[in-house]
Length: 240
Image (cartoon, rainbow, N blue to C red; front, side, top):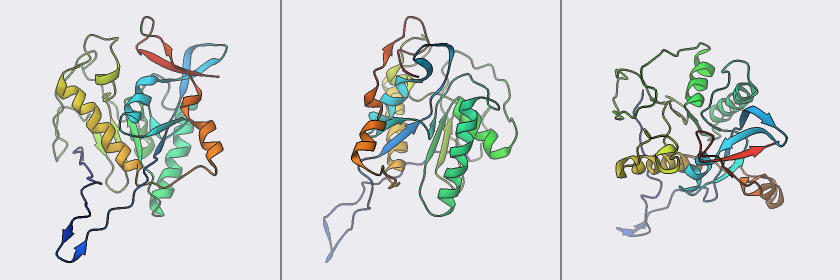
């Protein structure tokens, strides 16, 4: 239930094998991943919703571009049942299930709050339980049967849907909390997870209707603000 597997999309080569040339797997080399913004606790003019820049860097580090919208469900602290975040996520979750059921590859990743929301959307129940794990870093032990002290990482049986209760992006890109690990193995974990999910996104061939619409949607149109002295994130993208 909770083991993670790495899909080696680039394991093929054009070397001769007997009299045959191996055919590379066709992939989308320009993947774009949407990140769902969420409400700001203390909204101000032009700052009603936000995305932590570490999520953007996490995906960009593995070769993807980001649109501020949907699909990677980020962490945060809004309601799982009544917030705009949860309602939007529910809509796109159902669309993703429909697409995947029809053979249209459409991966989703949920982090922290996104993990919690995906369990709710899948089961229809709040399956959370309290653990004494706030503000600490623990080893990540993968098992086949899910009998850890608690489940921190999940993947769906039949769909490309993945979730972590922990934050893989923080190891490399967040410095505001002393308990965030920055060891070489922790950094490798960040990029392993990013590489895995972006390679999943490469299997999807969704695209914008035109280059112009694509360019307008990209997060490059926004500038992150340095917020590390006031908030839990080093940088934040704010949206109106």
